[in-house]
Amino acid sequence: MNKHHWLAAAAFVSAVWVAVPAAAADMMAMPPAATTLSITAEGRVARTPDIAEVSGGVVTSAPTAAAAMAENATRMTAVVAAIRKAGVAERDIQTSGLSLQPQYRYDNNVPPVLTGYQATNSVALRIRKIADTGRLLDTLVGVGANQINGPTFKVDGAEAALDEARTAAVATARKRAELYARATGLHIHRIASVAEQAGYEPGPRPMMMMARAEKVADSTPVAPGEVALTVNVTMVFEME
Image (cartoon, rainbow, N blue to C red; front, side):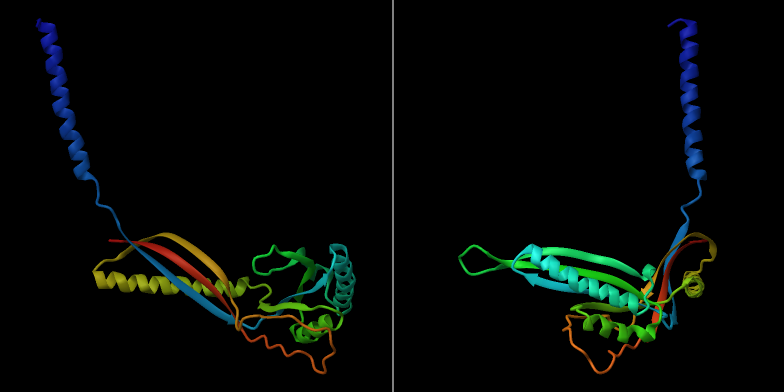
């Protein structure tokens, strides 16, 4: 090996021996991973609902599809007209379902036999005067509705109440984090992330019924009670 080649090899070996200790020193200088604590807390406020949501419709059966749809259309037209006459605004009336299904009779060891067709048409309503809910349900039945779902009670303009729930949820999460910090001998360094999930919690479950078109003496009783507005907040704290 001539002198120039020997010097180049020596420089390469020297560079290798210098680079490896430097990388190891950098790894030793890295700070340890932060200790994190994830807390999920709920904030809840109760409010008296001021909106009721109901769906009402007509189910008809006939030997043919055309006959089932025709009868359904006649009865549903009367239902919608009664809803409008009762004072429900157009913006609060929305068709929520329309279907036509064949009906079969099933017997053992024989193919199904077509017996007719069933047509269903339903409309979703938003009732802004909750006191009128029972009377409106009776009106729907009286003009031919034979399927009722609801009511579901809600709060119109619920953001202010949800903000109260958010504040309560954050306060609960921080309180729990401080408890864990004291128990482990650590301190809260900072909040790393916050995420939320909001929603309603209704009172008693809504009713579902198939109704007969007959006159009733008294309005169907409807008790709105209270609804709970809840917010679940997940907060991640860095501890030190």
